[in-house]
Length: 126
Image 1 (cartoon, one colour):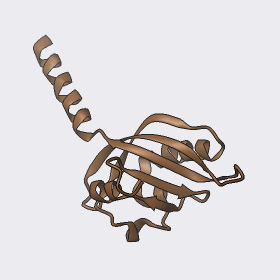
Image 2 (spheres, one colour):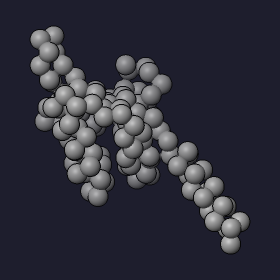
Image 3 (spheres, one colour):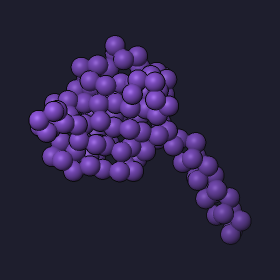
Image 4 (cartoon, helix red, strand yellow):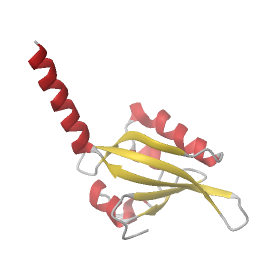
């Protein structure tokens, strides 16, 4: 998990970060020491997206996994990243839900390209 080439994070049942791999460190600029034990939603998600992201985490905490959920993540340098996320329920050996694991993909460049293409099409149509 730690050396995977995708950002992987985990939160406990209270939403506190308990997994933050090296790719998440590289993308976000936050070393694991600065995120572990902190609220993912309250401290690292912009206010206008907190409810939506919390909803996805809550669903996973009730056993309902979410695939291809996109949301913005603010980096330590205050840059906005667009992340495509799969949120999966995390269980212990007895099957009890103990948190959520998120596997992401940075889609920032893809979103920017789509916006550029849309502008080009709009201007060509004008």
